[in-house]
Image (cartoon, rainbow, N blue to C red; front, top):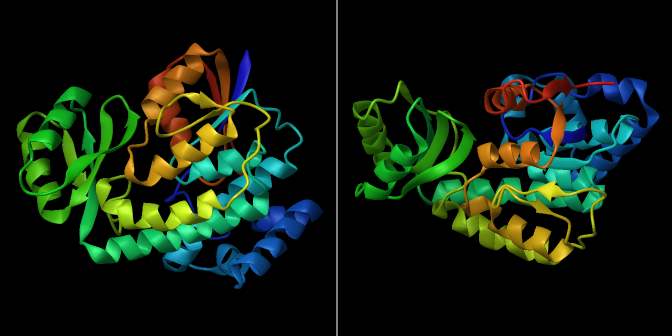
Length: 296
């Protein structure tokens, strides 16, 4: 039975995150203090003592989730992966945990990514919506036929749960059509922009410069990447897929199914929250054991 470790994305943050790690583990404290130096502000103060609202700040959210996950993976003696994957931002955590990037380089990329995404959101008003209980093909068709603006599938989270991303008018138009087509819900999300869509092109272009300048190494195990849902170990392939990630959909359903097909019988979500555990249970059913690790 192969072990698969998965890493959560933005939205998993919570007040007090990683505080117990910092206080109980010397390696964790060292890594988190190093992060304060790299980011040039004390992100740990916000992670440990900040409110939910303060944790939502662009410069905080993505680095905070990344730090909780990667520090925990580094300090967890049982971390011996046969394969890894991460959801959106979580892919950076997966790559760092598997040794494809140095911790410091990965954190710098995550910080640049967060700020670049914020700038892209300010260029054109946009949002995302969760479509519940409508066949994937129908969701894709309605998005493709929309004439009100840009709208695309962004996150294939599990069968019956797809998140779409696009311009505000297009999202409203498409949500009405999804409900008319039989969707149980079409819920506009409280996010700042159209992540994983063509509207993130300005952010992708900015992040690309930083990714191109970063050294990637062969990871200790295959990394299943969002863009392809396939395992990668080649540094050049990993870099190419990461470059495309911001403007491409997160193929999470396909990723988990491919991990199962390749022998994964045990999944552990490492980091804040339990969103991925829920999604994997829906995808894998009784094919795998699923657990979570938020602290040591």
